[in-house]
Length: 352
Image 1 (cartoon, rainbow, N blue to C red):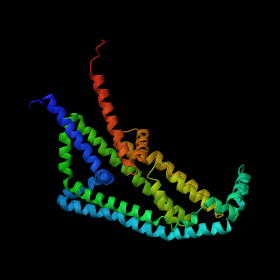
Image 2: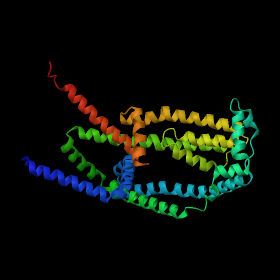
Image 3: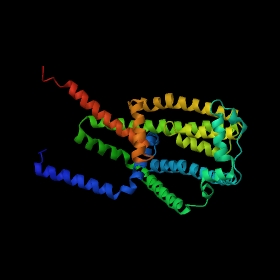
Image 4: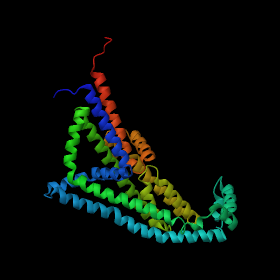
């Protein structure tokens, strides 16, 4: 192929960059849906391959998997939403009663070594009297009746993103192989033979992160949910759901089970609160120090420290979808770094 003149090459690069930026600007509000669709497609692609190998046509496999994922996402959210809505009324009523009568200081607080006196004084100053409780809680009694318009707008926005995510997911399932082939060709032209390995590492990183964060987080929520039920904690479904959601972020679950333990202690169930805290700490320790590093680092070739940095950095930059995009970006960066280092090591030293 005859090389393009420099002027034509520059014009082509400028045109490609301009069209790319224009497309990003035009699709900016839909980028979260596209990113979520890509993450879900990568995580579940082995299922699609099994269906196709089993005789299903690509379009039929795409329809089946899209419907299954839609049910897996929507049905639990609807059930949990109904349950949370029911329990939210009890929470609002409890807050109202607390503002009206205060919350008596449990007798065991004063017996806590070293901090018992301080904790008792704080409780009596902030929760025991209705005036203090009202000042601390502010306008908490209005939680159930304000901001419904904003809530409805946010709900409609999330539903629209979910709809576009599922629509994009269908086309990725159906046309994914052709898209992968085109990407390999373009990547090979731009970055050479190492493009295929870099892409494979990025895909494995996303898949390993999904397994390590989502599946392990859901497992933590289920296990600790049973612990909440056994301990006699009120609203165990709400606490279990919150544990599963926050457990997708490393070190997020302790916030929930600590609140659960303190709630049990405030209800004079001190032993149950201590057991819940100890059991939750054990579950999270095993998950964060053994299960997650094995699932994520084993499939990504990334040190777990870099995985954590990618998770938190992606979450800060891109929101929830950044949990999975962050480690993939780190993986690509490290792959380029390793390739550059290996090429430099193979070049002869000019000083010799």
